[in-house]
Amino acid sequence: MSVAGTWDISIKTPIGEQKARVTVTPDHLGGFTGSVGGDTGALDINGKIDGDRLTWTMKTTKPMPLDLDCQADVSGDALSGTVKAGIFGTMPLTGTRV
Image 1 (cartoon, one colour):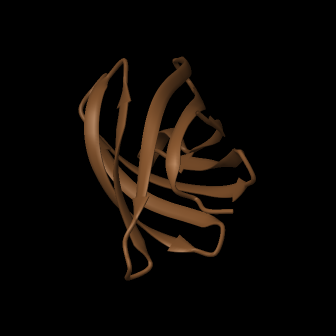
Image 2 (image 1 turned 90 degrees about the vertical axis):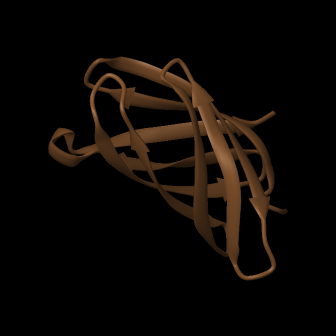
């Protein structure tokens, strides 16, 4: 099954659960473009696809500036992975296809 689509994700952070919607549009070079939108605003993302694994980085400014390193494994209509957020460590990410 393709990793393409729209995903509702949840990240368990030190300040509580953060929800967002992620879109993934694969390209022909093993990567993808998309966006992440949630309470903290919207961000364009670019990432890589390796089989069923998505990896991407993004920069957020709310509630503070952070570089986020994300990875998620897709299994059917579910995904799970992690978000590494600098000094805050690694947090679990889960999601379902919309």
